[in-house]
Image 1 (spheres, each protein chain N blue to C red):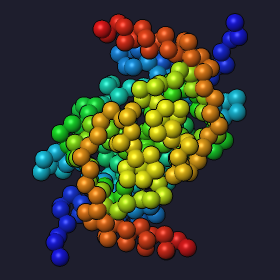
Image 2: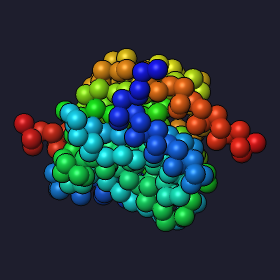
Image 3: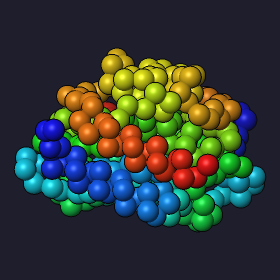
Image 4: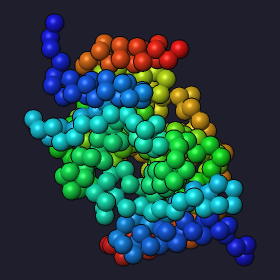
Length: 149
Length: 149
């Protein structure tokens, strides 16, 4: 079995930690070349913040750390297909490449729903690579929701 | 001439202050009944945060102030048609009513582009009222961009 790339392993670890904290397990990492700029997980409940998805938090952290508004030469790794809010933020941040693990037919906005990066009003389209780490990311989500039933 | 509703006047004042600070002038207010819960403006440059649109900031502020993840009985007033990121956040926050002033054919995602609230994968649709304060909001934006040419 081919090992997962390090950034996706970091994103999965962040997602697993979120599950332990009672949050829907989604994790994200921003990389610049081989350097990890930020790692975050989903935390809307703990933070009382409906916008606190993993992607939003990691983009905000990375931009703060780099001291600028855009992340042109950065890539984003996330364990779940981004929703419309997060896909919009990825476009605003000018993320170069988006890697996501599991698809999200119910709430995803990259290959489902509005397919945001294909909209004429989308001002920036990252390169998109889907499916890396899909099985592990989906298992985290399945176990989380199974334990809550 | 019919005076503008107080929340839109507050949003326009926040937008005007943003312009003074060199930010694209967009302002937003979250109300609960007659109570102003939060007022914010667009500030991605000052904050080094590509997600710092007026709507995102006002939703985060209101949720923090109320100490919860959702803003079910709240309304959002904003001077410009929300983009996909902000429309997604409005849905996640379960905002009851959305009032916006000027339409945004280039980046708006309510009556333009992905028309997010009409997507089958959108889990919550606010009531939407457009056009209140449109002339004032559009003038702020026009003057801002004219001064930068």
